Length: 479
Image 1 (spheres, one colour):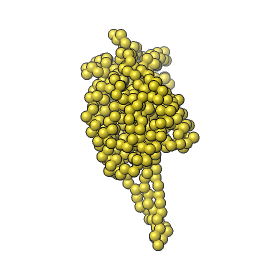
Image 2: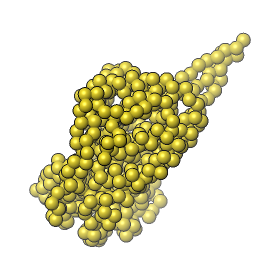
Image 3: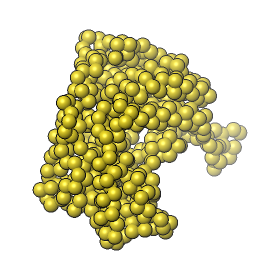
Image 4: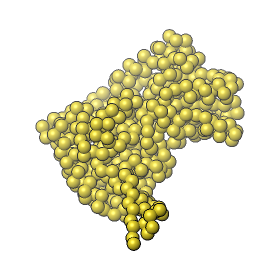
């Protein structure tokens, strides 16, 4: 399955210098999908040298040449949609329809930033010096390194790779070792852009062999991470030694507020499939459900009814609505979270256990808990799984205060038919993204990212490319 790929260094696929390999396991069958090379420190250092040469060649290209290259990559990605979607589902277990949508969103990133490459505007500022003026323009920051998680193995890379290339940076990609094949397909698509050797590099392997050399290198000037808050905090500390630019999308613990005037059916029809997409392994999914007391019982009834209809199984089966968790550790964590909530007084309404009827795979039932209080772990911490924790509220002031009583600030959602209430909610919720009557926050044209312990910087939108650019000003004086 991985035979035609490997590490990608200096414009070619290669094995690890010491020949080391490791298996990648299916979360559905728990069997090996194949062997992938495992980079050593020497491999990562070679990728850094390659990226330095690639940067010199790539930054010399005009913005229009970079745009054409990104469009060519997008064309190739679109052509290979079926291959990529299958790879996503095989490695993550997510339903094939969700995998196809993820790859489509990834193509969109390359289309969007192809056009943004043409719109890296400078400006002229009048000087107080007679005959002078300031010119402000932007330059690519240098080598950019991307560290990504396994839950959206295509989209998370595309959000970093596309703006970096559009800005004129060369890149080193370090994907999760649990989902390396998706990164390989995307990097292979980059060959269609006729990029200079070294403009894109891919290394796979443990922290000591990949992350550590990249963070220690003075040549790498920008790092972007999608991962946990704990890892993000460590990356900030490590980046300080060489003063790298950092941007990161970290954990979330999104609240969903359903006000008393909400369209209940619309809220239910959107909330259930969104909550259990990718088995709940989504940083921006709603974890804390705050339902107005007048709608609480009807919401719970409708939520459970729709949850019962979800079919679990292999994501390659088009009839499946939810696949497995990524590994056995996540299964154990879900059991621990549910047990803790029930012990603390929550009511288990549906699910709550490993799914029966499977001889293998990391399947956990879609789970609904009610009577959850804010001091319970299931509400206080991101569960990153198929667990909906439901609580009731009485007033707007109460629910907004409770929703904000969290260090995370990635996304938040509310359903209401009142424009006034919607505006207040957007203004008062402490989150980088707020959805009103919608969960659709991930789009290439809109900035994506959080505040507080959920990270810094933005991916998507006109804002994203700025993280890969340095600002330079010059004053010219003519007599």
